[in-house]
Amino acid sequence: MKTAKISALSGAQACSLALRQLRPAAVVSYRFRTQDNPVEFLARQAAIPHAEPLIRFASGPTSALSFSIGAARTGGRVILILDSGGLSPVSGLLGEASRLRLPLIINVISNTTSSATDLLIGGDCLQFHCTSVQEVYDANLVLSRLVEDGSVRLPVIIFQDESKISRFVENAAILPDSTTDKFITTIKYEHISPAPPLSAVPNQVEQKILEKFNSYSSLFAGISGRTLRMVEAEGPTESKTALVAVGPYAEIFGGVREYFKTRSTPLKTLLLKLYHPLPENQIKEFLVGISNVIIIEPLITSFGHSNLYNIIAGLLSGSGYNPNFVSLNLSRGNQEINTELLVKLLTNIE
Amino acid sequence: MTTATLPKDYSFYFTGFSRRGVRTATQILVEAALVEGCYIQLFDDNYVNKNDNEEVIWAKISSSPFKDRSRPGKFNGAVFLEPSLLGNPQIINPLSSADWLLLNTKISRRELAKTFKSPLVTYPFDASEIARYFMEDNFPGLVLLGGLLKIIPVVELSTIETVIRGIFKDRWETELLEKNIIALRMGFNEFSL
Image (cartoon, rainbow over all chains, first blue to last red):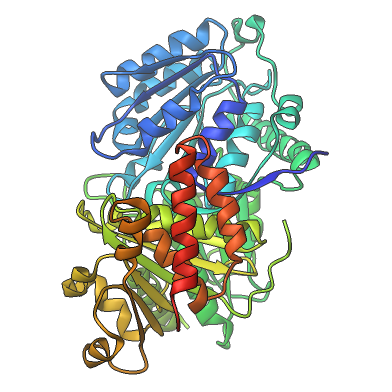
């Protein structure tokens, strides 16, 4: 195995290196905000070619996705780069990409104000929320391989938080092209030939995706020494109180866990990275014996409040567990305030 | 890559006017730390503060992996490329709990001590004069970086030189590259604690 090169990279840089290694046939992007947006950087860098890919800056998010769908149907690997503002209007059209079983690789740079929509996107897209620069790189390689698997073939949305990842610089290990070439599938025209519709039993499809996720993650570990995980569970098993959140809230967990280390009631945390399909069994196993669950979700002003809370509460409804639920809607903006708020809440529960 | 053996973890911020080399100097330092086997974090605070004229870039360097990715609550020190930024309350606020300040200025240490009280140790250094002499322009970032290595011996001077050559060999003319390296060495040689 050739050694990976450790570099100081921002999330956008690491992502662009992974996307280049995927050797896309087309890179399509639309940036919702016009000023100083990593979307354009990412698109331009990703398109720096080994073989010249097509790069297209679309006039709107719908035209970007429509173009991507068209390009993917011709048989090439297509990468779509959007920000949250651009993702929101295309959620309906994403369903079309799923129906056509197109393995689009969609990278979304999500920011604090529009993060709410990240968890509401419908369609049968896989959704993965990265928690570090390294994970953006790894996720692009592993998940592209997963969605191009003949039995999966669905779009994947890989989210990276703009302030915590896209613009954040930290150590990241980048594999040599010669190594990733052996891992990445060579797309063939027949890959995009008509595929059967998704199973009428969604749970079976989702279970298959979860199994494939683990097998490609293990395969990737063989070349990189790192596994991509769907969830991260931490804390002692005897804990009666648990925090559950999706990727970008990882920052809050550290401070709260540190505080509760010294308390009589230790804390368990579950960070969900793969949001769709939701790793339901792992969530259920994590919540066994828990009396109080706090679910942290984005702050939304219009609709869709407590989406994750409702899903998890629904999951447990038939299982015999009946913990106390607290649904907490937090902005990702101020980590210190969020941590303080959570510590107060948890102390009260205690 | 060697294994880093830093005596402690470092957190600091560089600040100055935009397009004066603030980001470049910080990036070079963290890249050098990375070459020496450290873990690094760097973030551009301008994205948060939405200020186009002034830059604040914070960095953390450690010999072990970081437990979090948040802005440091307490900085060890700060490097000011532009002394007038001492008038910006938002930028100087973290100095209240910092250990040292490296300031690009002609003002004497005694004068500075009247403004900044102990335990903050101030290090005035006229880096602009050296930059103007060697680079014919006011880009004091690398000169200050040379001086900084005396305050926090976080990496070897030679590693920084290697990193500069690695990053800029394709972007800068050879003459400009050498001028920058001389400015860095002069900063290191001329600065005294």
